Image (tube, rainbow over all chains, first blue to last red; front, top):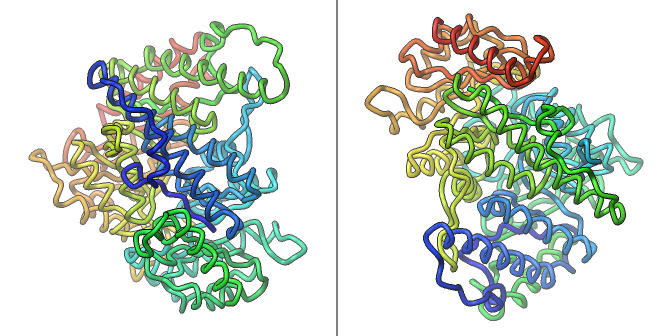
Length: 292
Length: 292
């Protein structure tokens, strides 16, 4: 899976080459508005180039919403442009937004990400993601509107179970009555996903399980036999795809390896053209993943 | 604090009165785009009317990002318009977005919410909130970029400690080595906030502590003596402001009572004009809160 977390300060040269020469701004505010507009357009070109290069070796793009939201409304427009390009390339679109809120608000997030919203002027379509990430800290009633919304849209969701960052251990590893908290979360994920299991045995409720702690995947697979595991942390965060076998146990589609900086930033290590480096890195990751 | 979580299907009549009569759409896609545009404009008018009516009795608006994001990029533009109106009325702006992610992404959220982003075209300003809500499940390293970003912008943040929904107990109440998880989170909040305490004794790192479980506030105040408590759940979720005394212990500004539906939807119970009902409800809540 191709992770797109564009940093406007580190875009591929091809994304900048097409930028019009910045006009003299009419003052600081006009300058800021122009910076946002030009950066938004450049982010779009960067992401489209990355999809063109690495997309054919991937099954999905994972859009890191934070990286777009820093350009405000212009960033959301870029999200929509990149979503459309990914879909035209045949890629699934995963909204990596890690939302989570009380039930009435969770319903609004479901409308925003995979559903639509009734208005007096007609139905307003949401982002239309094929799947999205969500944070389970608020408990079952906060997850049900997200899961129901995903089910109604024939989409999926991935709930954070054990994240890939070092600080994950601060709370997720706390002993919660004889088992670490992340195992309790895994039980909850399995439970809310049970009623939404397809014939192939996989549920629409998946789990984010960091690839950085592969020794936990066997136990997590026991606790969540139906969940697709979204496995971030390969590459830039130090994990290797070879160690992830347990994730794929029940079904070849039961694991999705997410790589962002190790694909889009591959030229920094390999040298050469960013697109060619990204294509090669994505192909290699695909080969390793299929052989796990 | 005035919570704004606009539902395009339940806007004040004044927000709809100004809408142009919907033209016949040129097809389903044009119809959807027009619905989004008209709904976005109506959401703006609704929020501006609510700010005009209830704002003078409040210190801040809390913008529920989910409710705007369901209109995509148009919703983000509405967020920006409402933010500007709130600021012109002298209100603080709290971005209720409940973000949380691994450190590199948390940095991007800090840029999006309170900071700015360097681009080849100049600095792109973020949303410019005075404070925002965040989810601590990913641990200390995921919080530090948010806290540092808030500090650099002279802004604040509120970390979820114990939320106001019934399902909060599923994970937050689990016994985590002799104390419930929410107390462990409270310890973490106090710890990351300690280095960012002002002369008045309050830290820029606050806590979301549901007003629906007031019996816990005394203990939470012990654990977080420096934190401003954001107290949601008054009104529509059944909590009463009178029971929240413990939150205000150390400082009159140490508690912020958030009410959304009980102000903006006050006319549903009281009858009459929505603006007058909202003004009265906000004034009453202000009086009760100041007397706690």
